[in-house]
Image (cartoon, rainbow, N blue to C red; front, side, top):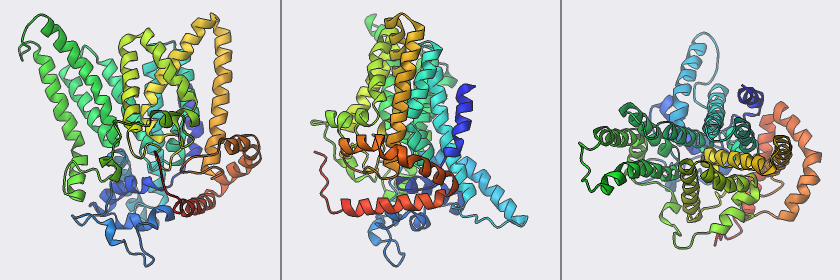
Length: 477
């Protein structure tokens, strides 16, 4: 109940705007609900200037180089978030049409406030669902008080709030939700999975990959299930057949079929837009540095390093070692999942997320971070041998990390530090203690009283930075 109450109290923070990458994500939902096609020309023209200016000429026409060989706009963003938004946007669209029939005058075009409010609210709900599901998973393995504390810590001291509240048209909060649902359901049904549960796990898995392609790496946990089934058979020198475990064989078949079925919207959109079902549209998708991953930079760089920007995640990752000690199966799965995802991102050409608060790619790992942080806090209590001291220490530490994160979010959002590229640590630290305390109250007031004007000012600052960045060569190496 406390988590639900906190979520309700934070709802006024929800910022219903479509910006940047969110233009591409939201375009799928709007075009399908309103226009019943995959034509995104209106979305590109209605986009924020930093997105639109590189795609639309001065006459308001889409540049020819924005079209693919099939004649569709190059929308390489995943359709997954739209799959969550569409049912709610369909209901809102019917409500708008009904209201207009009764005399209202709300534009039924997908850009009016009812549509954007609906999209933003669904994203916030998805982010909260990720937290709540992760909390329920964590309390299975550690005392509930530490699962609750870890949930609060990751909620407010990681990158999640930026994409849960302030940039809701991006995919990260939704991705965290489906990943949390996947791990929770996989754990809940482990070892006793019925055919219907295999089917549901496949449906969840397909949506998880629809949402964010790198999430496919988490499917390795099904290899754990497979190994648990096949190794005993091999150890008895029996050849595994359908008769060996008919339910398991049928279960894997149902799982794969359900996964492919739910993943088919992605394959279909790739086929329509790019002419090939396996095309991603991402320029960087063909450039990977698997032999020379930037392991240190991803964690500690001033250019959106995971630990340097969101230090609570360092403690969460350390906690995964304690989680292995608490429960070898869930601990090993969580640790290997983080390691595999970390290696993948470190090998990616745009490992920093370009325009990113912290390293936004890792928001998908929200349930793993909550598990790790909860395990660390539980281990702290054991080490101190005093619940009161442990609670006091954890409260103080989490409060500091949360306030630090809020200050850094403010700096990033208001462009006191660059939205893209490396930051100056001395400037950032100075701002935390000087500029943030002075400026934050006025900006908060504007956020609730004249948000549209504030967003326009932020967009102008972003355009200025883009113009400055265009004069600088990009070098991640």
